[in-house]
Structure formats: C-alpha cells, structure tokens
Image 1 (cartoon, rainbow, N blue to C red):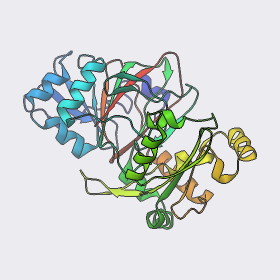
Image 2 (image 1 turned 135 degrees about the vertical axis):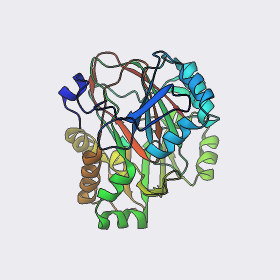
Image 3 (image 1 turned 180 degrees about the vertical axis):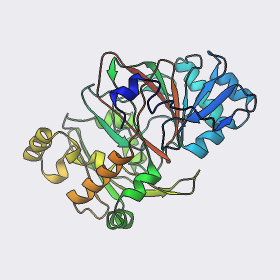
Length: 339
C-alpha cells in the first residue's frame, strides 16, 4: 500500500525510475512499470495531449497486447476524455460495450453504456473485487476514467488476481473450488437495491425469465420481496494469461464485510437466509470466518494503489486484476465502461 509520501513525490513508488519496458510502434508512447513489484504498466505520450483514440487507431494491437500481458494499463498525459470519448476508446479496443445487468451496486448511466463508478458514501471502503464475479457472465475489460480526482484519498487500488489466488491457503482454495460460492440476495427490505433497480425492469416475469436463463433461483415472497440464490465459480483460468485466478465476491457479499455495528444490527433483525445479501459455500454451508480472514489477508498483501490525476484512464483485464475504492473527501468523479 502506498504511503502519503509516495503519493506526493514523483520519486516514490509511482513512476519511480521509469525504466522503459517497451515503446509503441510509432515511438509516440513510452511504457514503464506502474509501481515497483507489479505487472501493471503506465503509458505516457512523448507529446502531451495526444489523443488516446488516435494512438489506438494508429498503433495496431499495441494496447490490447499490453492489457493481455500486464493485466492493467494506466494512460496518463493523454488528452482528457469525456463520457463519449471513453465509450469510443473502449469500443475501439473491445467492440460492443456491455450494459450493467444483474446489478449489485448503485450507479448512474451517464451516456449509453458509460456509468458512474459505484455511488457509495465517500467514507466507505469498497473492498477489492473482480467486476461481476458474483455472476456466471462478467465483463473481460474495464475502462475507468478520472474526471475529477478526490481532494484526499479516493484511489482505485488494484490486486493481481493470480497472486491473490496463490496467497490463499490451499485448504481454503480447495473448499471454495469444490463447492463454489452461493450468493443470496433478499430484495424488498429497503436496505439495498430493489429488484427493480437490480434487474432494470418493473416486470416480475422478465426478472423470472432472466434468472431462469442465467441459473439464478428465484423465490417471490409476497409484496415487493424477492429472494435469489446463485451458485457460481470461486476461481477461473484467465483467458489472457492462462493462470488460475481468485474470482469471486464471497468476502464482499458476506455480511461480515460491513462495519461491526451494522452487521450486529442486521443479524439481530434478520435470520441468516433473510439478510439483504450474504455469501455461503456453494452447498449452502455458512462461510468459515478463518477462510474469509485468509482471503482478506491475501487481498491486503497484494493491494497496490496510485493517486488519480484528471484525465487518467485505467484499462483493467477484469480476470487478471481486482479493483476497489478507498475512502475520500471532496468531490470525486470516475466513470466506467465495461466490455
């Protein structure tokens, strides 16, 4: 994790030593380690203000190769992109963008398929996770663009999912890989997203049809209450690297991810199967606290972070790297597109 000195000084871990890894085919963009000890890289144009879309169009598959080889790529010093520009860059690299279906967090659609990042209160931490790894279908690439950096904090930390996997003790990995993860969500309590927001429809039949198509069990409980259960993967093999990666949100969905006082209040108010959201082993057995502690320790050990600057774009291979959000103060605006 970076210290305050690192964030303030160009001599710290970020941008330190700028030893060139490679140069784009037109020698317009230099590529260097994002942070010491990580595969992620940063790209900086030789001429400030170069349009990333123009570079992408003229450099062939350079950016795609960097994403696949390094897992996460920071574009810094290019001309800032608005929501339209971010969508154009993402579409040019990845093709058709993905909508945000089966939602788990509140976001606002900014333009077409470009969204705000998760709209949680600024004092909250969003734990490291791979986007939509609570489903059986997820985006392979994330595009994050900083419109306004926070006055303090607000970094988007990253973690190498293969290294997280390898840090989790073998006994914990084996249990999760054997059984998978069951995500249980109870809609209608008014304490989380409504089913209407999560599934982007007012039609119960559409929700039921979507869930049947995607292997999600549904149970309508009267009124606006809906309970869903979904058993999916705990690990996957990265399509780009071929490595086994930790790929689930058990530690994030589990009620223990909440502040202790909130967890206690929820447990006093709801039975285990009525909690607004929770995670279990795939066979329905409650998660062992020791296993959750191992997973969280693995993420903490692999977490890296850099300070956002206006105009930054980070391209993340969603299988190779997890991401999160640190608490912040002041205004902060980060947009995201998924492909």
